Length: 378
Image (cartoon, rainbow, N blue to C red; front, side):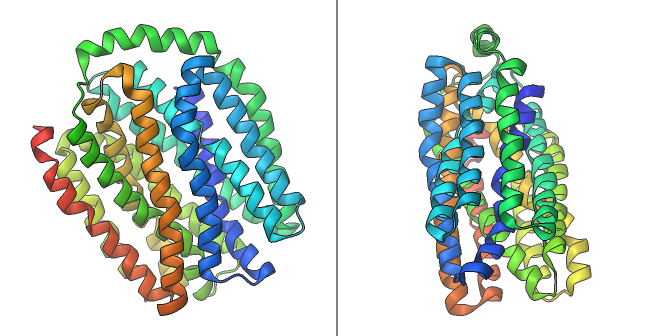
């Protein structure tokens, strides 16, 4: 749990510090919103395409080795982006970082689900998701502070050094032989505790996750621009993202438990309706009240994911979970890749406010899908 949560914090922080980087790139290179969305598309596409192969590779050489290699590759990507003098080099660096980031979610989630079986699985995965948001809180504001004091290139070099150090530590914290023994020993026990293949329910759960990820990627991408329009400087934009992710961390931790108490359907309805309402509420608010509202937005925005991740083991047998989690996270990454360019084009045509309203409407699309999942959850 400690090793997987630590890796999750680093990789999620790596992903979300990019939302501080995008406005800096827009200012330096004169990018449109659609071009910013394409940069996000490149990163998310690389992450999406690498997750299932990462899970398969981990079955051959061990999860610890794949996690270490992926972390080193993500760090290398930020080094390449920082060393480049043009937009093309930045794009290449983001692709490398995306491929490296693809290794973490399917492998660590599978290990957690194998170690904590039955009813404990949803709470354990909620705790694992909470750890990811610790990275989302810490790294964006740290990067924003470094970039404001020096430049965005030096900020990337600093976070890359953190990734290289972590890559060297991962094999020590999670030896491959121990990870493989844990997976093998726990898998047999968990067959009796939970998990039978239900492909229809899994596909429906995946569709809910994709729609939820579409909403989250749209809001996180455009929140810095919304804050900038309200008068926020660069450190304040970093603070805004940290407030959002602080609420998200609390939401992921609590909603994993809430899903056990209220059930998946009621919890998803609650979080997604609140997400849509709070996004709309952000638009007219001045900067300070908007900052105050962001932790609550984060609770609703990110809390759904813990409920969804924790439900995957109910529909998949233990021996197929690594691949299932790979497919599940790939779906979210595809949504994260395709959503920003579409929302970015809308922003160029109709403006930022209309785009934010569309992001809020996307959250409500999860409700009929969740209602249809009810029979499989009984």
